[in-house]
Amino acid sequence: MADPAVLHAPQPDGATAVLVFADGQVAWGRGFGAVGEAIGEMCFNTAMTGYQEVMTDPSYAAQIVCFTFPHIGNVGVNDEDTESVDAGAVGCVVREDVTDPSNFRSMGDFPRWLADRGRIGIAGLDTRALTRRIRRLGAPNVAIAHDPDGRFDLAAMLGRVRAWQGLEGLDLAKGVSRQISESWAGDVWQLGSGFGTTDTDGQGSAAARPHVVAMDFGSKNNIFRTLVKAGARVTVVPAEATLDTIMALKPDGVFLSNGPGDPAATGAYAVPVIRGLLDRDVPIFGICLGHQMLGLAAGARTAKMFQGHRGANHPVQRLSDGTVEITSMNHGFAIDGDTLPAGVEQTHVSLFDGTNCGIEITGKKAFGVQYHPEASPGPQDSFYLFERFVGGLGDRS
Image (tube, rainbow, N blue to C red; front, top):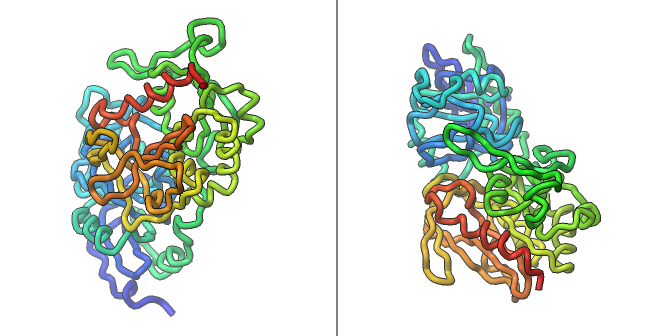
């Protein structure tokens, strides 16, 4: 039997897109980007800039982003601000219609860019009200659809979103990870010259750099650029890389990347590898999902958060000296700080809600943070983490 809450939801004139929530509520708007339907968990992001990076961050796989900043898309898009080729959010919700781009770096408009990538956008919604709903009720499962003719089967959409299992227990890292190992040659971006390159063939200066093997669980490209900036030579391996594969590359250190989904699900195959690295005293640095899986490998537990943390203005306190870092975050799971075993120290906490934002394993060169130090929200509050990791690789004592 069809759900009456959906059947009686009035469709306004001119509505070409719709959100259908798992509880039967409906929100109408104006569609842009790709035509079609997608299902995901809706979250909100408070950043005022960086919508292109957000939409291409693999950590947003199977998610629909509600942007709290109203003027999304107005500076257009370009080829340099993409964090991944195919992965990222399945859709976005914005307050205002996207206007023609106005920015000297723009190479195209946001709606066409979304359409080319099969991503759906919906405009004209009260994003503040949607954000308050998420804060009050938690992150909902939602179907988003766009049809220029305004034709939607709401009851069928409701059935599909209710049948979707959600993010808890879902391993998404395998689907967004690189499938082959590769050397990373991209250097940091400079205005006017784009991305430089480093010599990674072993014939030049890069041969003397510490070798970091990065496990790709759905990484942002800028993380690898920042490792290079800190002085490393980087080889990226797939999420399911074995311990033997990693050790055969003779790493000076191993980096655990960000990524989407439930860390406990991804940890089914990644945690044994990380434990093997810890047993061999290989230095480790983890970010976001990688941080969570380092915690799992050390004996802690992770849990789904009520609403998650996503934005570019999250204050985090470093417990060693009380310093507050302004950080960029994107996560819906976190390490349960109450489950940290002996020998694992909590190093950072969120000043918003006190959740764990950093750990360090006693007696090992292994640490992780929940936030994204490469995203430069501070703008350089957290670069020291990369310097600490790469700078300590020359001494394995």
